[in-house]
Image 1 (cartoon, one colour):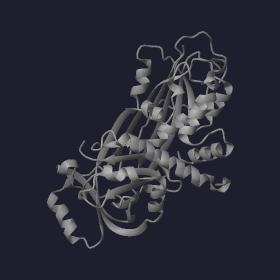
Image 2 (cartoon, rainbow, N blue to C red):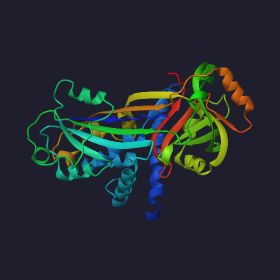
Image 3 (cartoon, rainbow, N blue to C red):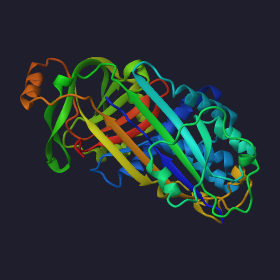
Image 4 (cartoon, rainbow, N blue to C red):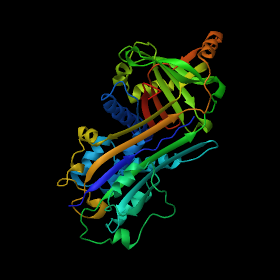
Length: 402
């Protein structure tokens, strides 16, 4: 019996109705999926830091649609809410993915997906072609049967990059038969590095009290700047007041969207269940330019969790069943299935500044005569592309020191 080991990885490093409505509909749908994924994971630990990548999770599932057939394909389509076999959907997604890995001065964004295939395993030419054209994806042969072979791939943040045409020829299309325990490892990588459009001054970073859950107060390095930002105050369906701030990166390649409960006694767990794509769209569309004092803590988060149970809850069950999985579109053979779905995510927001005294922070607050956004308590963040609202990462900061 052949097995497929699906490894979904994220590398995220951050320093500092009709056809005409299809782009908007897909944007809202993918945002809704991102929030749905976040809300499921968030309920498992309301007081912990969290980061995950919707792109890192969904792109491999899109790729699998090209190789899935029958009920396996139907389950994947129902879980995502769209099918890459629809030409309009396929071309829109290709256009979005093609535009994302562009670089601008001071910013770098990469989105890749590598399918490691056991040497000698046959692959359908049609599947090879689709992979080569999807989200900067590629195929690469590997000896996955060596001791710890898959562990080595699973422990790395990024696959080895390949250039030129995708693998082809007899190795991929006419591979040997009768190979036992053939494996596939799918590694999805999202990386982002950029400087802020308005830089935080190193000398203004200070130790400021941050109130965590259960009123635990910590002294954390807090970045500071006065800048023109997009800001708004809104109310969720449950009546909670939320401050929303957007901080752009250099070149407008991405922005960091911050959601902060206005009431210091309102935990994020009261806000998270009410977030929807339509609400987020209304809020971001209603932001206004404002000159503000912005306080944002340095933070670094890394998570590692299994997506299998989440996909099960979404109705994707046959994919993991060696008797029911139908992935004949990948190799033309039976017995190929997914054994694991692992997701790794990392984000770092910082500037290489020096610590200043808490007294300096008090002086800054006293002299300020303009509005203040001070993230000195748990908040939610979205790293997104501002023009398409494509969500790279979503998460929350409950303790900047963890």
